[in-house]
Image (tube, rainbow, N blue to C red; front, top):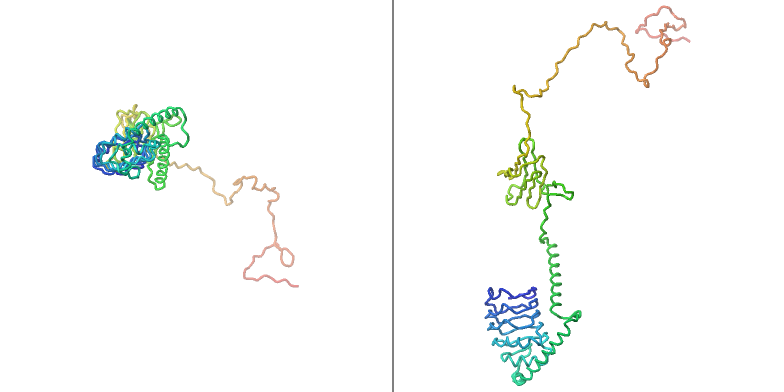
Length: 395
């Protein structure tokens, strides 16, 4: 099972779900404690490198464990004795790695581990030869005393540095956690950008607008752009609101709210809200949905029904329908017989376009006489004959 580089902070559920695993890779995480591993009887290789572990523990029941990698953790000289003691129960352990832990700053660490774990064949990638093992067993009493001195020195050093600020770039548990948080944020940002580029990023849930707008008035909107009809004139005692929602929309996706002064329908996070023309009774309202078109119908009884004007007892309405007026022929007075002349005087009185009246003396009748070709006038006018050509002038 490979669970490396997953920013894990705890080992859990392995004893219940993966009891028969043989190889478990948990390196490069943020695990602070070895736990949840004691029942893995068939486990042969455990890799816990690059974590925040300060003590080897919790693997006494791993009977088949042959290789344990604890590279670059935080096992100190103070916890070395207990860590080695917890490994004595793992009789099948042949390969152990403690490289990068502060316990190796003590020069007798290798000999101490080899002397206490006779089953080891390799320590930190270097074979353990029989001569080295015999020498380590002989030096064990002295190594025990040196370890106690080293533990006391490490304790005093830790107490002295307790109030001092940690230097920048120091490799500590806190710095590793901070580094992993930054890496996790960068990884998340990278994945988000990739999802945004591919168009698979989940959209943030839409915030449904409230009942009132910024001015404190009842909001009127139709975000879904559905066809609707508000009928307040067909029925005197109720107001009918119809909304053309999608035909195959599940009714559970509709949220209807009827109030005395407004009606509100939320359909797939889209709000349709309108003011009512009159105050209604919400408790007596009825909501239905058409089986053929799927449209929503809300019937809201009025708080004060309309009063319809009653008809007269004889059944005739107050207002009479309009009737066409009878045509009347005006009587004609006797007039004088028409004269042969037509007067145009006074037909157009525009002073700008009508010439002024001329003096009567310019309009009197002038008597004319015809003059013959000889230059003498004739008292009697001869009638012209069209068949006679005109006389030519003689020179």
